[in-house]
Length: 317
Image (cartoon, rainbow, N blue to C red; front, side):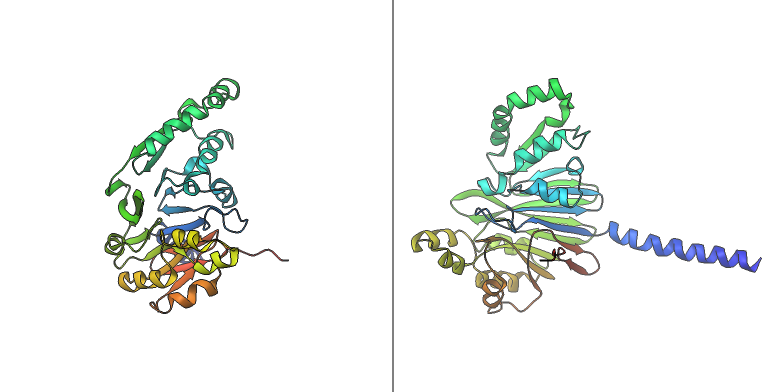
């Protein structure tokens, strides 16, 4: 009798122990940096793309080069991604989209069988329409020969403006304009879920609007440009100045972090992707002393009661 009661008590304790982490996990936002690079093709930093998982929902922000490969490394099924949010339409942020869209429709069998939703700045719906025309031959053959599901290749694209653009299942996604002149509009995004908050800067100079939207956020993922990388690459000085002027330097980003006071700041979309921690950390510390990470591909940030960072395992030489 005593042994039976003891077993029941132990069972209840184990049950509660298992439930608590699961419940905690359900109340987190998980951010995975799929690609932290910029236009130059390098193998360690793919094109800009970020996976955000809030509860049971998964979203992709930008779809740069290699986004599908990174999702595959994570064993995330493309058909489980609710939709794609584009910050702007520069090629390095969208060049991976046709692969995500079409390969995700076909594989792994069965592929996606529902339309894919895409949100982005003015011109997004037009771009998606042109992509459907560009791949019309392949789509027609796949429908006839591969018997792919006809709904899975449909793109439901929407040109958005600043404000709440998605709100479902406790997840709220807000687009806000940033300053990536002459690209207008360009957006950053704020994701809110279960009292947690994440802001993705998109491409921007110092933006007062971003500073407003990112006040006190749990996690701020911000782009950064390192002038030293252009010098090492031998880029003509006028060209280097022009590119850097479209972004923020590490010292400028530090000022943004000091004003917004995130629980954690993370650099992504490194311009150029050869930037090192030495290029970025020291200048940031001139203006910001808080928690800071230099992002890398497949880095995971769990935003819950506390913020945990997991760097990808490195293979042995």
